[in-house]
Image 1 (cartoon, protein in one colour):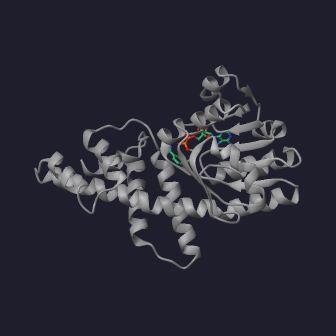
Image 2 (cartoon, rainbow, N blue to C red):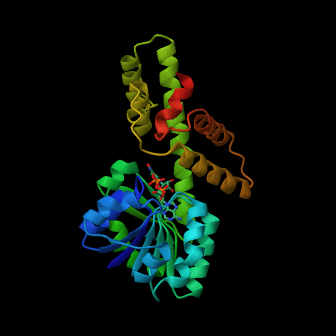
Image 3 (tube, helix red, strand yellow):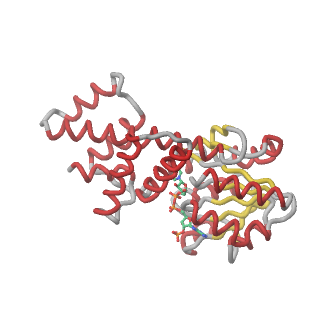
Amino acid sequence: MNIGFVGAGAMGSLMAANLMRAGHALSVHTRTRQKADGLLAQGARWAESPAAAAAWADCFVTMVGGPQDVEAIYFGGALDQARPGALLVDMSTSSPKLAERVHAAAKSRGLAAFDAPVTGGPQGAATASLIIMVGGDRAEFERARPVLAALGSSVLYFGGPGNGQRAKLVNQVVVMQNILSAIEGLFLARKSALDPEAVLQMLQNGLADSKSLRGAAVRALKGDFAPNFDPRHVVKDLSLAIEEADSLGLDLPGLKNARARWQELVRRFPGARAVQEVARLYA
Ligand SMILES: NC(=O)c1ccc[n+]([C@@H]2O[C@H](COP(=O)([O-])OP(=O)(O)OC[C@H]3O[C@@H](n4cnc5c(N)ncnc54)[C@H](OP(=O)(O)O)[C@@H]3O)[C@@H](O)[C@H]2O)c1
């Protein structure tokens, strides 16, 4: 398949490489061109714009920052330039309502659009073991599945347009509060002069155990802040989740508190590029 790919960032560069590894031809566009150098060296062709990538593609994939980028790409030319019958797959974490708008605009042009955000981070992207949450038309989903299967170990269909994003936002509500609670617990242990290793073992053997406790929180304790997930994207995701909950008349105070913590991180440490750097607020 000819795949047009937009967004060669922390996740997209690894995912696009997996699509080529699976035998697809790739045309890539990304805002900062040198971020595509690795993909071009592996045989991808450069597209001068997202619309140019869409015009060439049987399947057009976006992995950009958030709703503003998604809106600019789809309504700024990609929808108009896409080939008849093409698949459009937005894998960024974005707004469910925007996904519905893209889907409707696509359908009216004879195109099949999906929202297919992911979880698993750069490690999952590198090893093609992402969990992918899909929203869109069931009848068209089987056409998109082989492309998605080259990127993840689990491709989950959640229903109509926007439902992939809704499932992803639920994931973020749980994961980010989980990371925050693990970090707060471990930094309380450290401040109390408890042996952090002993506390960690106790937590991991009890009800508190979680992947966050074994991953992000441990890295935070060690001061390992290698870039993985931009804290500005965390604020974006939690804001989208709050917006979605508000639109349903649901108040989620724990979620608002978590967002305030990452907002504070972004304000005080604008260079932060790892999710667990929220621990800096507790040092
Ligand atoms: N990192 C993670 O662990 C993770 C996990 C799951 C989901 N996500 C989600 O996946 C998406 C991508 O994450 P990421 O970590 O790869 O983010 P990222 O490193 O910020 O990458 C996004 C890329 O998209 C490019 N871009 C943005 N708007 C564009 C446009 N209009 N045209 C062309 N390129 C554009 C950016 O260009 P510049 O380089 O010029 O900024 C950047 O390279 C986000 O929605 C994020 O929330 C991330």
